Image (tube, rainbow, N blue to C red; front, top):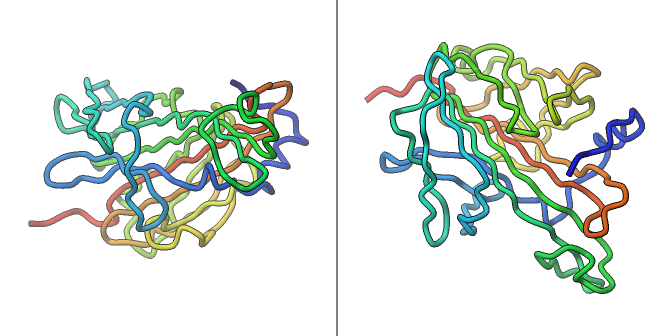
Length: 242
């Protein structure tokens, strides 16, 4: 499913708010020696169907792919790279959602929900950077991407990180960026310029989760009116010391 790319549509992208069906974000955290996939909104850490993880990709410092498996647990997913990665990306296909007249969301396309007033197909992506000096590979599989333009692990808390936001590989203007999604998911820090670039303040000494989300209008799709996308970029603000 591809998004329209006209200039009129791109202008609309920066103005449209995500629907309730797109509200949850995706990122990864290291917990008890494991890389866990987190699906939530701010401090929330919600259960989700691990089968919805549609892909995971790990890389070493040189940008060479590292095999990674997805452990699909009853209420979430865990990523298991063959060796510690320098870079890790994950994608989740949350499926089609339709809203009924009484404001309930159903995980189906509108063709199966009579009288649906809204409909969307949501996709969520996350990019994590673990090692300083990591070479970023091509990340074509991450359709909505916050790409750091310098090594985020060298910036430090309180300093600006230059990023570029890409949708389907193309820079996107007017994207609102949340600088601290875990602690303040409703607070927009900045938005991208005409070239898809922005400066985002690094907020935390620990885990930083920079995020963006939007709804993209679709034409001639019998099941959904929009494509909902969320993406995050995660990294530590300062090196971890024992």
